[in-house]
Image (cartoon, rainbow, N blue to C red):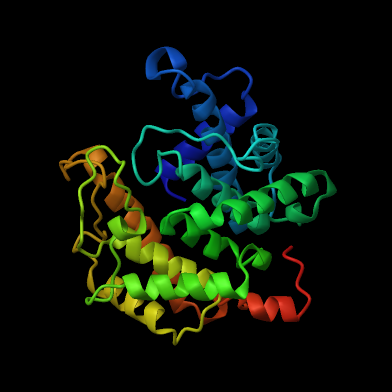
Amino acid sequence: MTAGEQTMLRSLDTRVTHWSEVSPFYSDAKAGPGKSAESRATEAVLNAVILASYDADRGQLRSVTRTAFEEAWALQLKSGEDAGGWQWQDFHLAPWESASSAYQGAAMLAIAVEEAPDHYADEAQIATNLELLEAYLKRQYPSEPLIGQLYVLWASAWMPRLLDASQRAQLEGRIDALGQADGGWSLYSLDAKESWNHLQELSASDGCATALVVLALEQSGVSRQDAALRRGVAWLQHHQYEDGSWRAASLNKNRNPETQVGRFMSDAATGYASLALEMYQSTSARRPAPAEKLQAGWTGK
C-alpha cells in the first residue's frame, strides 16, 4: 500500500469514527440549499465502498468498515420514489456529481456489500436495507442513462435478479452498438444529456468509458471470447500513454489537462483501465454468468 493510500485510509477512519462530530465537505451556507445533506449521504456511501474494497483484499471486515456501512444505511431513503437509494451531491456535473449519479452510487454500494468479507451480505440486520436497495436499482433501471446501467450490469455479478434475460440482452446490444470503429467507447455516448451546462460532445473513444464497459462485461461473466470485450481490451492495451495513464476529458467544460481538476477524469480512466486489464489477464477471475447462477440456485450472497 502506498503512502498516499495510507494517508487516505487514516482520514477515512477518522471521519467514520467521529461521524457525529465532523462537518460535511459542502454546507448549505457555502454551496446552497440541500448541499449539507447531499454531501453527508454521498460521503457515507463512498466511505463504505472504499473501506470495504480494502477489507475485501484483507479478507476481514474491520469494525470501522462495519460502522461506515451503518452510517450509510442510516441515511438510506426509506420512502418516496427514491426509496432504497441515497441523496447525492448534485452540482450538475457529469458523470458523478449530478442527480442521476445517485443511481451509480447505490449500485457501487450494492457491489461493496456483496464483496465485503465475513459474509456481511448475509447478516440479518441489513436484510431490509438490501431489499430496499435491490428494489430501487430494479425500479429505476429503465430510466437511467447507460453509464448507470453499466454499474448495475457490474452489480449483477452478485445480484443476478437485478436484470432479467431480456434486459441483459438489450443492454449488451446497446453496448455493442455504441462501440466505435477503433474498438473503444466514448463517455459522452454513455451519459449524453442535453441539459448539462457546458456539455461538449466528445465523440472520440476514451479510457474511462472503454474501461468501464470492459469492467462491467468482465464482472458480469461474459465469455472471454465476447467480441465487444475483446475489442475493448485491445483498445486499452493500445492506448496507454508512456507515463502509464489512460486519458479521458471532462464532459462539462474544457479543462487544462496539467491541472489537478484537469487530470481528474484521466485518473479515473487509469484506475478503471488497470482493474479491467488485471482482471482480463487473470483467467481465474471470471465469474459465472447470471444465467448459470440462477440455474444453480444461487441466492446472490
